[in-house]
Image (tube, rainbow, N blue to C red):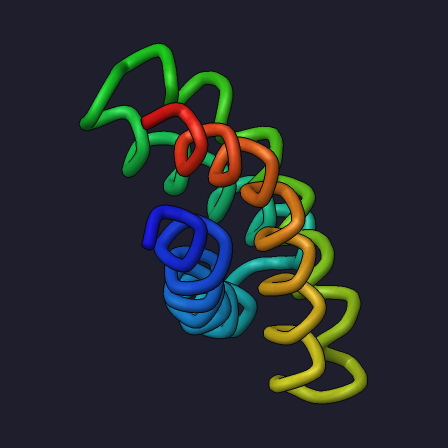
Length: 102
């Protein structure tokens, strides 16, 4: 269950949320600004559980946001798919560690 939640459910869910927010931001600001705002927002969102985690997590979301902005040019679902897959692979090893540590 941990592997499913961390390596499938969370990446897909968070990617759709991120994509929606980025689509909105891109209507008002240039792509680099939208990417930075998205990464900062995800850092803040993840810092509610542990403040230091927000400082660590903004970097992967900077990459995920950049991937979405670049790949969405080929289609919204293409952008979502690339980011969700990248995010899933990013979470896979920690998910496996958590799943096997019990």
